[in-house]
Amino acid sequence: MKIVIPGGTGQVGTVLKRAFNAGGHDVVVLSRRPRHPGEVHWDGATMGDWAGEIDGSDIVVNLAGRSVNCRYTPANLREMMDSRVHSARVVGEAIAVAARPPRIWLQMSTATVYAHRFDAPNDEATGVIGGTEPDAPGYWSYSVDIAKAWERAQETADTPHTRKVALRAAMVMSPDPGGVLDVLLRLARLGLGGPVAGGAQYVSWIHDHDFVRAVEFLVARDDITGAVNLAAPGPLPHRAFMRALRTAWGVPVGLPATRWMAEAGAFVLRSDTELLLKSRRVVPGRLLDAGFTFDHTDWPGAADDLVRRLRAAR
Ligand SMILES: NC(=O)c1ccc[n+]([C@@H]2O[C@H](COP(=O)([O-])OP(=O)(O)OC[C@H]3O[C@@H](n4cnc5c(N)ncnc54)[C@H](OP(=O)(O)O)[C@@H]3O)[C@@H](O)[C@H]2O)c1
Image (cartoon, rainbow, N blue to C red; front, side, top):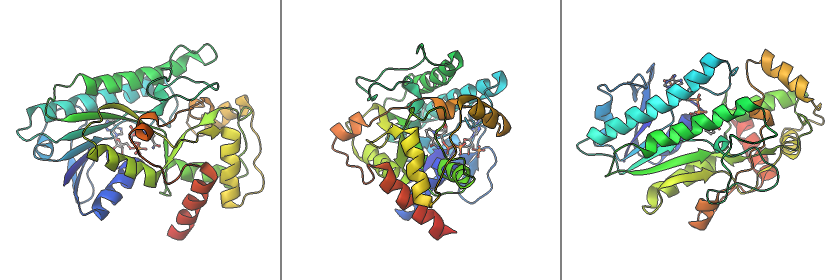
């Protein structure tokens, strides 16, 4: 198959490209700064010659979007929104005008669309969409607005011959340098892998192997459209999540951090505490209902596997 991955130069793109290439598929990545064979230029916002790659392709997986690992300044929030909505819209336009449109368009979304909550897990049918939680800082609603606008850009695209699926993905844990796991392990090695702000907030995650398998499953299942949660069935509190990660790496202690310490740390690291403090309790309702089985259901086992691979790669 020919698979086009707009925004495929980042962590998730690396995971998918590796798997698709191993499966013998032809992968084209759309990038604003193509550097490697198989990468084609686009600007993420307007039509261009790149659309010719989508015409005649089998699968499009759009991952483009400004990294959310930044200070949530008005300018950065605007860029986070625009880069996602504009890229999804123009991918839809390219599919709409294609003489031979792809049979499926997987559009990245995020598990962050759901409410900050502790009481119950969010699946696609009964989950609560975020934005109005009384116990969350007001500015967190902007991330939910981004996710909703991102999904809407796909929903409203006029692509009648292409099945559309929005991937509400949790943190994709892979052993790649610069990925989420790499960053968390660096903190843990510095002794900073303790609970933050009490550590009761839930962490949703998915092992990279299951992420790839879930994408392949969604490609194969012609009956599935719309939003699908890509998260392991066992989200767990941040405190337990970090403890398992420390155990996997062999770090005996992790200093706990208060909310204000996390604020200070996030300022220094040019990041935002929403990424740490929002309780993301997301479960894969539709995948499980459709018969998908996860190879990595519990975080301690997944963390052991990821750490083993990370060490082997060094
Ligand atoms: N990593 C996760 O665990 C996770 C979980 C849930 C959702 N997501 C979402 O999935 C997508 C991919 O994640 P990732 O971790 O691979 O992200 P990433 O490493 O930041 O890569 C995203 C890619 O988007 C492109 N991009 C950045 N700014 C852009 C802009 N202003 N306009 C157009 N393209 C831009 C970049 O490609 P070029 O510079 O080559 O153009 C970049 O390589 C992101 O949208 C992310 O929010 C990720």
